[in-house]
Amino acid sequence: EDQVTQSPEALRLQEGESSSLNCSYTVSGLRGLFWYRQDPGKGPEFLFTLYSAGEEKEKERLKATLTKKESFLHITAPKPEDSATYLCAVLSGSARQLTFGSGTQLTVLP
Amino acid sequence: EPEVTQTPSHQVTQMGQEVILRCVPISNHLYFYWYRQILGQKVEFLVSFYNNEISEKSEIFDDQFSVERPDGSNFTLKIRSTKLEDSAMYFCASSDSETQYFGPGTRLLVL
Image 1 (tube, rainbow over the protein chains, first blue to last red):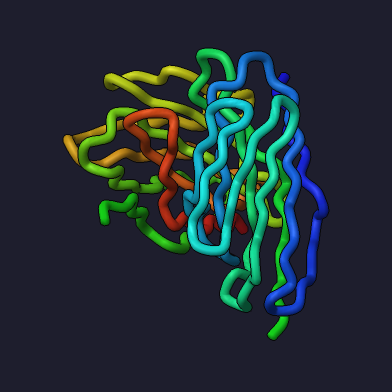
Image 2 (image 1 turned 180 degrees about the horizontal axis):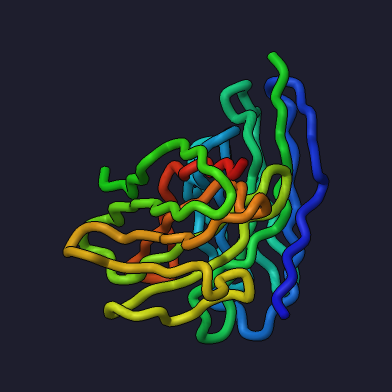
């Protein structure tokens, strides 16, 4: 059974204070690892797809990296509008169902 | 930019009643999904749908649930006899490859 664990559960940063969110996974045959942003009461908003160890993707202040056991979402010089819950999810084998982690609730203080 | 849409945004129903949640997937996508998120919990997979049939379903997706693509644009989730524990956010998603794009959700409250 696929497992996805995210840490920390919650993170408070000052505006401009860079940090990283972690997503550890246990799957049989990773087909893709996904990062989503979720605002309260909204649906997950797609950020990145990573397919293989060593891959990196960037978008504005966010950078996602992937190893064989975990993924990191690096946030550089965050702003208050980056406050949200960041979700990690995996696809494995031939399945099409995403397995989600519990998320990291990020709060960026002005 | 194309997006997944869902209606209604909120639905309140009495236990035992039937509800239908509606979704319009992104137009050129071929795979459709329903997920749910109980308040404070993880997003959970319910069902995937491809080529007019269910391709995968989870243990949650029992006989009370059904999905349908009644026309070329809509994708629906029906819960036949709602239970209190069906209260959750229900998300529709669609994809043309591995990446799934989610709708804004329907908040279902069963009283």
